[in-house]
Length: 284
Image (cartoon, rainbow, N blue to C red; front, side):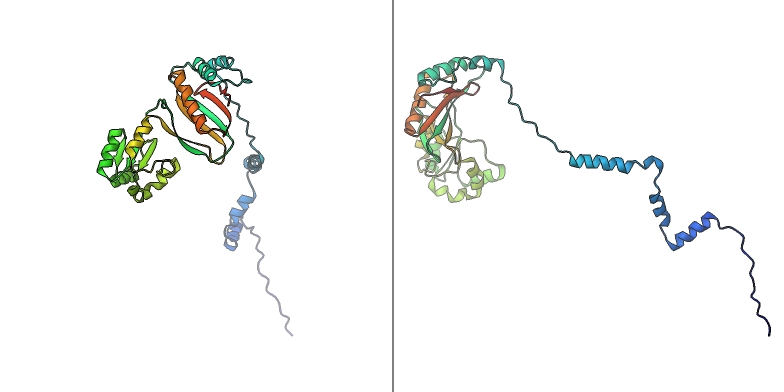
């Protein structure tokens, strides 16, 4: 029998170069070199992920503590006049007004403010101050009738108009006004601007007399000092501007007496002050 002899090939003694090995690995696993590079960060950047993680964790876990706002420091002039007001005493109305005029001397004409705490909520009234508020009111009147419009203009209305005025407000917005009056036939025409008038408390309604077929007579009353007074929403507090400090003391007293009389039996506490003066407690 012939013995079968296996052919022995020549042994390959040549070593594979790193480049060739790497190229084979790339063929078998494309992107492997990218993985290898990511798996072996450089010594310089080794600490960066850890540092950023620490910073991120610190930023996430850090809670900002809100500091309580300190009340604004009172000026020297205010502190000086505050010493003249006895915070434990309740003053008669003439005493309070006299003291207010004494401590309210500033470079501008301060508004006299009456602040009330009432026994009831949801109070709204119209009051005519005998000496006015010392302020000129801007009044807008909606009417489609020419004779009423002419009478309103003569009575002192700032703006008077009908449907064309409604369209102008829709396009340009509502100018600064204190009171809005309307005649009954204009109410359907005011629907497009109800969202403008309503939030400002200017929508005409019969309860406070701003919906009327005789706006001229109401304007004359407004010129004499007609104001609307009302409590805060769901709270028994009322804040009323009743005049200017430059008015005569007797005029300020009579304006306050008129308001207290209109709210007879409903007032628990009352304080009087100017725009930049301490509060003075009143006897009620």
